[in-house]
Length: 105
Figure 1 (cartoon, helix red, strand yellow):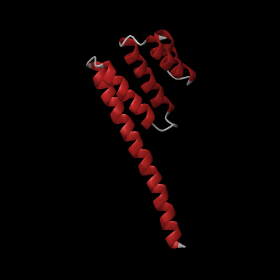
Figure 2 (tube, helix red, strand yellow):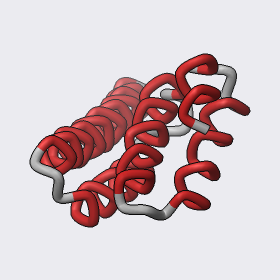
Figure 3 (spheres, one colour):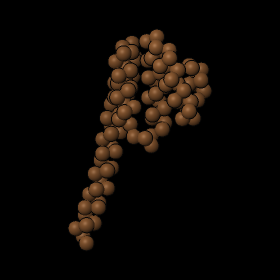
């Protein structure tokens, strides 16, 4: 019985560590995207934000909304207005950052 409990705890810990690692990976991509954006390297920022979106956990709606918003800005400054509007619309549908997204959209 103790053996089963040990592996149950180990499985829970493994899930937590995987969640934490995914969160850290998404955060690193997000920070790189911000750095690229600040340096007006919008194409690289779009790639980094896209990688962050695919790495973020689904339960982090606010983080995901921020990443989509920033990617929308990178699309906007790249002249890819349709892509920018798509990302702003995703943020608006998530009901986070609504007024800022509506203004840019």
